[in-house]
Every structure is written in C-alpha cells, then in structure tokens.
Image 1 (cartoon, rainbow, N blue to C red):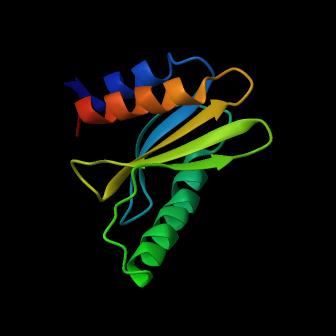
Image 2: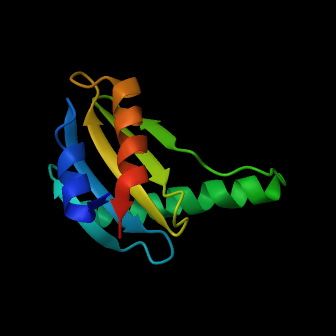
Length: 119
C-alpha cells in the first residue's frame, strides 16, 4: 500500500504520463497532484462535472452499474477518470500523451495504483 504522493509519483513513471491528480467528487477540490502542463485545479473542477453528469445519466437510465473508468480522447492526449473503488467520492484524473503512451498499459497501471492508494 502506498501513500498518495508515492502513488502519484509511480503513475508519472508510466510512458507518456503528463499529469495525475486525486480529486474529491463532492467538492471538485484537488487533493493531490503530480506532473503538469495544464492547470490541475481547473481540470479537477471541470472533470468533476463530467463524472457527475455520467453518474446522473446512469441513475436516470436505472442501470445497476458503477463507473470503472472514463476515457476522453483529445487530439494529442488521453484523459482517464477513475473513481476509487474504496471511496466513490474520490477519483483519479490521469493525463497521457497519446503519441507516447500505451493506453492499455496506462489503464492497467491506473487500476493497480488505485488498489494500493491510501488516503
């Protein structure tokens, strides 16, 4: 099990990683981050709205499902959002360079990091 800084630092070692953050879904606040290249405070707040919208849609459709992760593909980046299985009020926001990363490996690394994260 690793603490937040250790976990975020390990995620930054993945090929193509540009930034990573742990975000409180209820407030949109950034709880921890590593990397850069974009304003992670704004990204945390904005992506909170994305997660909220998806959860609301799942509820309206009366699906008995939870979000495993969400992928947003931009021209040069992948943005992964993964709610924590241990605390659904938190999610990890992960930014990867799409030309330098292996998406399957990044998703696996994110899943493994989430399992060992201690907050």
